[in-house]
Image (tube, rainbow, N blue to C red; front, top):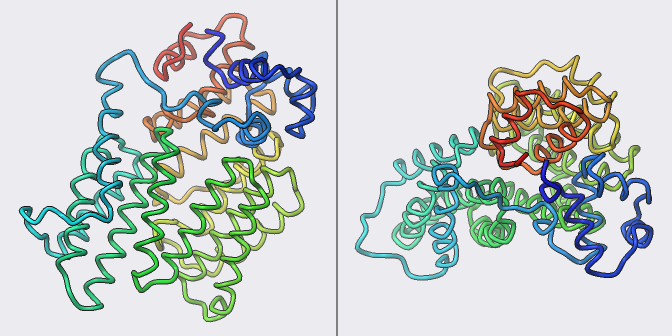
Length: 401
């Protein structure tokens, strides 16, 4: 495998450019020297926590280390990136007067269109998302200037927030973190006037997510703690949507704790989420969170991986029963995490099988996910003679031999 396709090689390059030794970087990033050495050599995949910590220590953006967005030599494979400028332009035009020459769409029609693109987001169908979103956002922006009355205007703002959330998912999947952060700004603006405080609360999770990616664990948890505090008075009313959002905040806090290496806090937040999931009826999907026992079970596996406990992740996955209604993006993410867990546990063949399963379920998610590339690169390095299947997967995601 090429030496420049994994995060460790990029870490080594950035470290050397700053005149730092591996020991000095380890001290600045609060990780072990041996871990830095293994990751730079490609013998251990870099975790999201390490990427965040090293990025902060080196003062470089996460994408500089992950290499995102990933481009492909085949024009057909690379075409999804051509859809990004149009989305960026409409996000930038958020506060401008809309095009009055375009027809104003009925609110029911807009709601159906937003639901459809959200479905494409659940499938991680990036071509559909990128094709539809710019025009849809322009239509919603026009509607925000066209409909009067508090009820209609708030409905438009909720649709706008939902569309922005899908757009952010599109940007994050492709690795355009700057665009994703810009979309979060727009989301906050419309969520604040949409008449639903839970929509605004979900904006806090986006801020926390960006801070987590930047290595600011304390800042991320501060936002999430404040958001939970705002919902706590309403939790006892047993409103399912409130329970779902409150539980999701605990899952996000569990992730922050896991990335910070705090196993006790991770377990505490996970326990709260599991208790809340038991109070939510199966099959609900409030705000697209799919919060419930099945999704929380998926998180239990991923959190064990974040804590670098491969055997526990594999054991939890063995007992997991995923609801058939769970969106493909969540199931695909589970198998990406499970592959990482198997690799940590030394199960190379099982790791490859998990990646192949993820590819069948959510191919575009797999193709653009940095942890997939890390796992594939480490598998290839550890195998003296890589299998044809592994070589095929590596070529498909853009890793050259």
